[in-house]
Image (cartoon, rainbow, N blue to C red; front, side, top):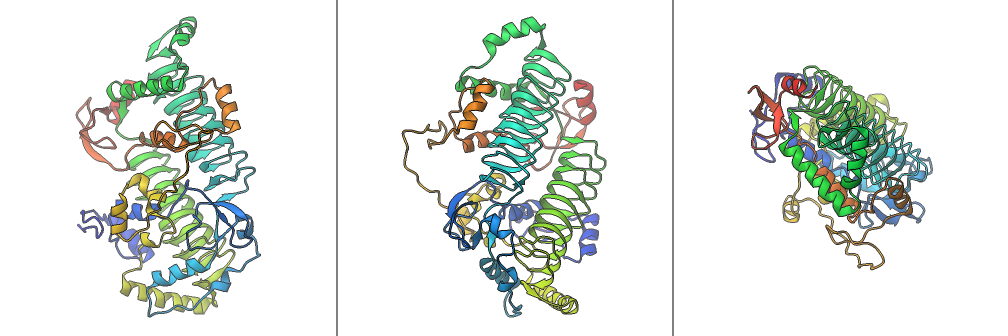
Length: 528
């Protein structure tokens, strides 16, 4: 059993893992799954936005790269055109230097897009999204309209504020992991619910308040059913009218969830031979989290329609990929970050519609390039093998880009959310820390109850709150986001017993947690 060279913990490499590593020609990993994921997360800054100048036009733009970063940053409207040539930064490979040192110098020379958002309208303050309209401060959102402060796997939704992980929903506020819901507030892990508030793990319910574990129910308060008239009369007294009253009700629901609700050992649906959490319609997906419609994947996070891949994060529609981040429609990619519609790439960053490239940055519709220099096919293949041998000697081959090369401060990256480190811990590891900009207090703006900072409530928000009969928030969007993310399931498994039958199971709930946790069979018998 190997020991992780970062955290020194022991981890298991299974026979099927070794078969995969042999298939793609890489050595066994030197880091445990958590440390490998942490390394990838450090390369992703989704929500920290800054005002800076476009290095092509000099115009002010919004970007997730702060102005003090040494990278060249272009307005996406320029970056996606042929007004600049990424091959102009091409250079020869130097076998006297490590690959990663040379790659970092190339990164500094090749422009990066200020934000990642394709084919959206009036959505300048969005990142890692596409095909949106009238969205503001939204991240990882697609095919949606009139959303504000919504994050993480939001698809085909409309008129929502402060939601996390949502599909095909409308008129929702402060909801977490919801599908096909309408006109509701504070729903958590709910499906097909409408005209409700403060629900946990409810499916097919409407006109319910402060409930959990219900299926196809109506006119319920704290899991007790009423007639329609009784429900509406009670609602007049129980429905919160102020922001603090909503927060008290939310806290009450969380207490009920912990002490009274029944929890399934892990959230796996319609999947065979799969382990992890939030796995839907998958087969042979192991040690993975938030995976849908995928087959034969391991140590993968936030993926959809993926096949035969290991160690990939935030990727969609791919096959035979290893140690990748933000790959869309990629085939046979190794250690690549933010690459779309590619095949047979190694160690590439921001490359699109390309194939057979190695160590390249910012390419589009290219092939047979190394360090952004063009080669013939035979030249490329010969040099590629020499570089691989060189990287094997230096210990770089098979490893993802080091965290110290990330263009973001560790505390700007998503890694800080899942693997929080103090400033001293970050600096001691030789990583970057982004100092927070100190802003003057503006008495004209509301002050967040939690962090004390000023925040804005835009006109579209005010209209939404009026339409939804909601008070205006008294916390900034980031503190509201932090409140929701504290409800996220841990991305690891623990051995514990089913409270009902005593069966040993691998659960997302650690043995010392107080929730009532059931195995699949006992949960279904109790809830359905």
